[in-house]
Amino acid sequence: MTLTRSTSGVAGERGPGRRAALGRTAAVLALVTLGALIPLLGPSPALRGTGEAAAPGTGGIALLRAVLFAALCVPAGELFVGRLARAVPGAPAALPRSWSAAAAAAGCAAALGLASVVATGNLVPQDPSQVDVGGLYASREGKLALLEVNAFLLAGLCAVSRRPGTQAWPLAAVVVAEALRAHPPTEYGPLTGSALTLVHLTCAALWAGGLLHALRTLRRWRGTGAGAALLGRYARAATLLLAAVTATGVCSSLRRMPPGTVLEQLTTTAYGRVLLAKLVLMAAVAALALWARVRLRRAADPLTACSPARAEVVALGAVVAVSGLLTALPVPIRW
Image 1 (tube, rainbow, N blue to C red):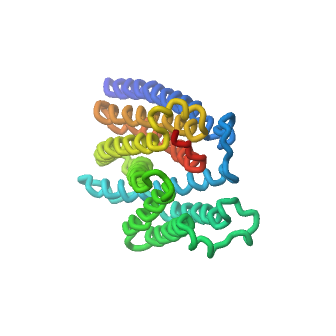
Image 2 (cartoon, helix red, strand yellow):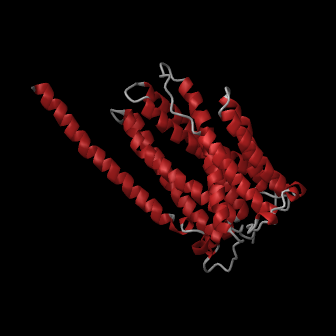
Image 3 (spheres, rainbow, N blue to C red):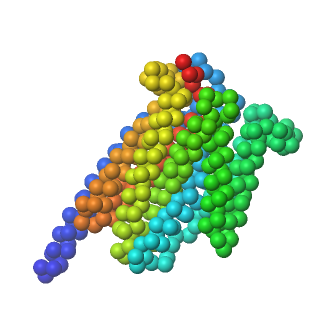
């Protein structure tokens, strides 16, 4: 009888605690959503009152870039966490079904859409006859667009092959192409900018995609002690990834908005407004990551860290969407 009452009491204590945790997570996500309203509503609110003009089809281009970034995160995270999982002592053989092939297909479709825009002189094609495929080979931007299409196609083939780990190479090619595309030769210090973007995008893909796959793996490993070990390994690596993402993001922003103009451009330019919303989201993501780390180290059940980690995945998804919009907006002028 005593054992029955004790177990019941523990369950009763866990219930309210779990509901409180979910309530706090919902509150954090509500605040994050409020901070991100401008970019999530599209380019028009961000451009309003700035005197800047958006390129045709900015909303569609932003969506395609967000899909491309997400398609990069999913397989990168699977490869990253898959390696961590293999190093966990006594890890179960069961792993979640791979999403890499589907992600590669989505990435290839998004890259094709972006390539069609480049093939029509950076205008949204209204008719297939307007797309000059041969013209893609005549420009640097066109060649990079074709590289991304082919890289995602190859990544999908690798994902369904007997050696899915080989998709790391075409995924790396996508990252390099994006880094070069974001910093044309006419920009101030293009090689430095490309290097910063290369590190930023790589670390962000491993962080976001890795957390998603880690949580999916924990669901398959439910009831085993290996789940906490995997989450701990990911958390240690994520700390370094977060530091790298933050450092490269700050450096890239200061290159485009010198220190003396940052505060003004954060509110008077579309790029600055969306960047500010991204900073709000990143602050929330960092807080959720810290919350999960504290639970992982101090809670009686380390797997209670999954609750803030799930909220972190949602917030990271919003960051990916905002990043897609950020790449489609006009870059602020260096004053």
